[in-house]
Length: 112
Length: 114
Image 1 (tube, rainbow over the protein chains, first blue to last red):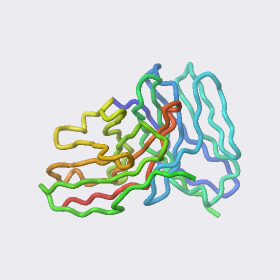
Image 2: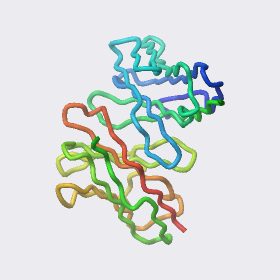
Image 3: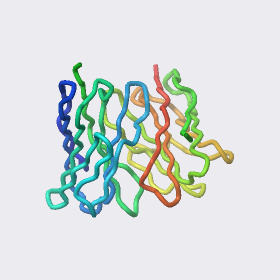
Image 4: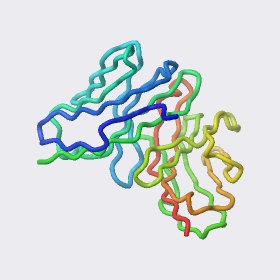
């Protein structure tokens, strides 16, 4: 069973544009939703995370929007830059457990 | 900034051989994890470890896998008899006692089984 579904699989955005990546989850026990950024040959690096008690969290150009009733959350990258080109993974975990369930990843390419 | 380190960066082995992947978690972290990522696929959980014992493991983590914290700094993943399908990137992660959810990942070890 796929706990976290992520889309799109790949995304091409012009420099300065907005990148939007979406994730949906099934398990209502999840209470922590991080986004990880991964460059080729590197490990995933925590980018931003949200808990379900808020609907939005913003850190610089990165914003998570969270819709608890729809069981969806998304990552918005404003003013996308070529340096943002990477693979982005959403994930989810439960309060009582510590396993991360990762989405399938989105390969983002920002064209100069 | 503290970081998780892993060695080796790349390990090539013959099918059926044993391999040990090593990790040094962030020093004040007490929860440790192994994940794997087959090329081009998502990151998959293998096992979590706390207080010298496994706290959670996935279906992937069968009898050929084991983990150990042999001393105060290292955390190892052993694969007893490697298979071709074990070829993947293996990531170690660690987290603090109070912030279990915030896991910090190492750079990974690329395991190639021939």
